[in-house]
Image 1 (cartoon, rainbow, N blue to C red):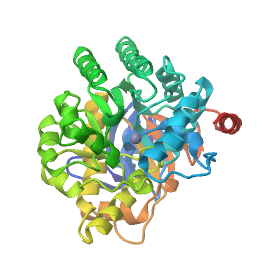
Image 2 (cartoon, protein in one colour):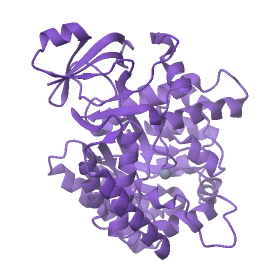
Image 3 (cartoon, helix red, strand yellow):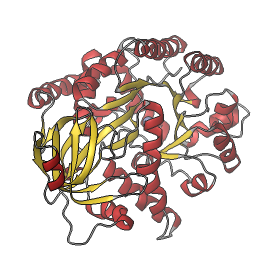
Length: 443
Ligand SMILES: [Zn+2]
């Protein structure tokens, strides 16, 4: 049993309770009680004690869309005289070449290194969307190994695409099926799967049909990029649809709990279709800005009642950073100082929690008796009071991923006082540097 005490606890429970001079008592994987530090120490004298004086304790953050395979792209020379001029060229010259170069070891070291970055930034649950078209079968097992070592919660999928030929598209679909079937017979509580699809414009009708059939058969929703670049929308129009939502809905890809990622080029008449499908939309502001594709119509999506979550698309592993940019982007885009605030808060602290709890089958994102002990300690001690109604403002203007000092998932400490405790970080770092050099030579 462990008591983390003397802290300011932001519970993010239904009433947004804040506890001062408080302690959270952890027994095994679960939060046993939250109360005044002295009282908790008296009540549980046998428990060990961790002092969190002048620090904030809050739930671990959730990232509802990322790509662990993107690790080696950072700083990489694209070896081309003509840098990409649009989104499609970014995909062709960087990402699709990268995912065809990844081998078994690249997949593992990309994943484990990115997972450590998640931990360092206080992210305790992720939704990964993987691609490695020269190493398809078994790739999700390699990522599973890395996720198990890291100790965090993850939902994994392989992004099926016909862009490298139908045969590889078929193999990618099989990998999702194999992996999800395998999970059903395993006792891996912290790992779940979805059926991943790259995007409508790289998927033929036949593949969409097979993916929908598989989703029916396995009773598992999908994870798909939707209308990210204008190219995706143009492709659907050429095929005779209003847009991407229209096409994916007709193929029954958009269904309850499916992650529809981006939605930048959603047509206004498609918003009711998306709402009707009960799919979630995942917003990734930094990635959208970096690819210069535009931004999702957040205001309209929220007004229509669509559940919108926040991800990073692998651009960063820091969810504090993603929420800051999401807020700025809306204000900038709409030239309205009131824009963004409420939506961003809901995406990160309400909707991501709902999405993760639904798709991982466990209640996360809240510090409350009986809930899993997924929490972070943040070195944040502001001169101004933290109250129920200004928590978001403190997070937005005061916190960042680098302030996270301790991370716990399922009652297990993964990082303590900024030291990753769960695995041999120095060895992994050295080995990943080696692997990255080797990868760059092959790219
Ligand atoms: Zn993505």
